[in-house]
Image 1 (tube, rainbow, N blue to C red):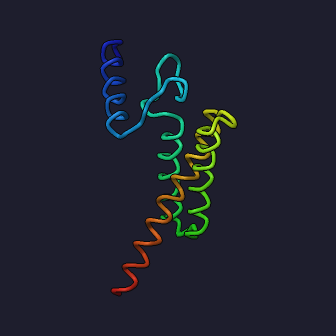
Image 2 (cartoon, rainbow, N blue to C red):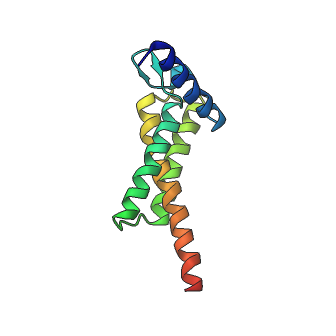
Length: 121
């Protein structure tokens, strides 16, 4: 692939990540070589977690709502500790807590959807 094409492709995904609401800070993003991920490490984790949650659902593995809420709380706690300047988070920790939160988001949404559908079936 030509360098100009790579730059255009990377720029497209960077704009897409920005439109999705990610701050895209360099110090909070992963890199492959010199190429920054189009979303930060926490958003990357959330996306990975959402994909994992869908795969779990396809394999009929149900994540209880309370566990989903706990996963979301863990990410919030990581953010809050950093926000209060108690301890700076790392990209790996942001990714892990984001992954848990992504699993929590989709699991809670699916549990609510399944409950609503069960009311009408």
